[in-house]
Image 1 (cartoon, rainbow, N blue to C red):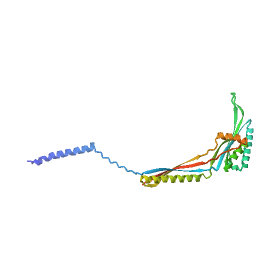
Image 2: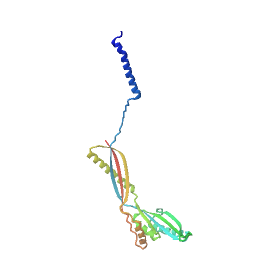
Image 3: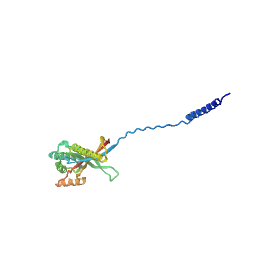
Image 4: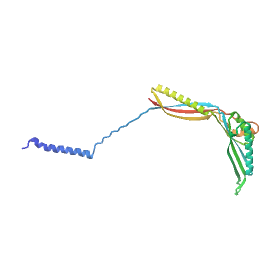
Length: 254
């Protein structure tokens, strides 16, 4: 006769087998999910500061744009008149000490003019024009140059621009001022806020040129042409120019 414990063994095996099957079923049909997110950050605090430097310079070079415009009945006549005026202008400029290499023709054109009063297109003449660009190295002669070109036949003075031979040194001086100012700002801010500045990891700059006293406008220049022809003379002020540079420095915070 089987004992009581021997009778319990089959039941225990059945129950154990049932739980094993249940466990396997849960693993196969509805597995447990395990998610592990690992985020690696590379944090770097940056402090940005700007600085500005400016230098005022006096122009020492001028560029004068002057021209001739003529209307004639034939192409040949237009060429003759234009060439005559150009030769007169060039001769007058050379007498002022302007080198021929500093007198440059920038445009030259001859175009027909038409009568549109009837349906038949009719050529009535020819319009000729040429433009000269004159580099004036001795800037004190800029007024004399304008008087000379107008008295020798130029009927257009289209503008004057001023420049300086030493612009690069002016820009470098302004740049050093801007960097010094930015660095001083950074040091002051770091001391007040209680952090330490590391190395500079970023640099950028912008430059800006400004004529403080602008040359005369085209309207005034057109009037000065008539005045020069009447003996009134030209009076152009060169003014001064501001060379400004702004820098942006990016410091790493330790």
